[in-house]
Every structure is written in C-alpha cells, then in structure tokens.
Length: 80
Image 1 (cartoon, one colour):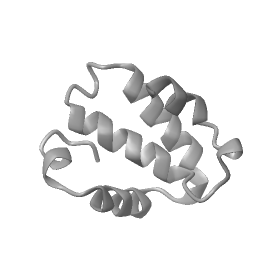
Image 2 (cartoon, rainbow, N blue to C red; image 1 turned 180 degrees about the vertical axis):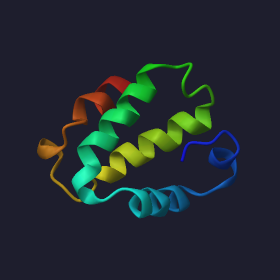
Image 3 (cartoon, rainbow, N blue to C red; image 1 turned 120 degrees about the vertical axis):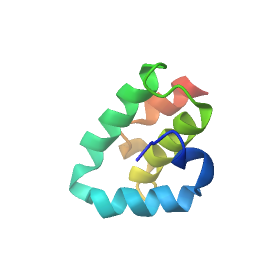
C-alpha cells in the first residue's frame, strides 16, 4: 500500500479506495496502530510522500467520527 513509487504517482483518493478494498471498518484500529508504528520509525517510511500518505490514511480511518472518539488524535497533535 505504501510502495515507494506508488506514493509519488497516485492520488490520495486512490490510496483511500485501496485501503477500504483491503481492510474493513472493523480493522480500523489495527490498521491505525500499524500506520502509527510506521510513522514512529523514520527508516520504515523513508520518503516524505510515504509518510504523508500514511498520515492521510490514518486520518481517513476515523474521518466521519467525532474527534473525541478518534484513538489516534494524540498522533496528529504530536505531528503538528
């Protein structure tokens, strides 16, 4: 999903659609934890485009929910 070349050549919408094709809503927390771990280890996502896509997908997992119920809110605060 976060392939080196694809993150530079595809739109965010492509990655969001691909995310939901692979994972269901019931997997949101587990997928979010994986993105969080990847973002914490800079060598696992060496390109800025990979990190940006991971952030967008992490946001997308809980986009329709109130911010208070997003378990990854602290990650976004730390990134700011």
